[in-house]
Length: 225
Image (cartoon, rainbow, N blue to C red; front, side):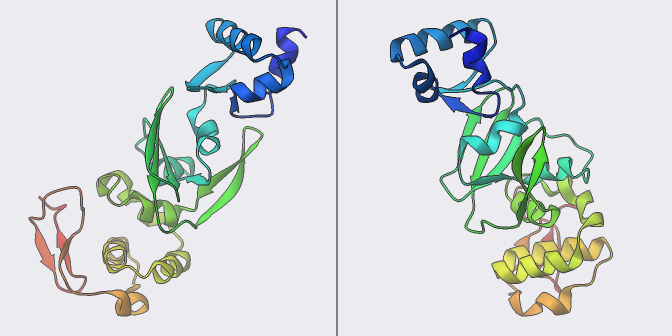
């Protein structure tokens, strides 16, 4: 079998393994030789040990590396054209352990207990799970400074965000999202007030706590510094 014929077998696979190659070549030692030769010619890209791709697009391959997972945070918001800062890494969410995979761009997988809020979209001929903007925002807290994704609040679906907050039932999320939505002209306080406690928390958990206290939301607005 010619090299091109072997490679063609993987054209419909964003990610494949040494084992996958061996199933076609049926000789493990030669499969290793084949992969080394193709990698040297840059016909195959190595992602990590025994894991390869024909694609040089980290966004495309990311969710095929860790399952289950979906693209979220700044990567999803950028995909939806809701933020102007282009992330230089791919942000994904998984129900498994957090990890980081270095490829052309780093791919970060953050663990969540709230594995929902995404849909499958066609991307370059493949079905990719990508967060709705509202869930991408929720997933961004403690991962990125709020300044990176705050502009996305202007374009969210108010009802979907309220539904997500009620589903998660976490006071810190309700307070931070509610406060920022109010800044963008939304009024959801009455919808989520029963989730809110009044232990003050920093608006942005990634920067110092100093700032103005907002008694309505129980927030220390530390973004005014």
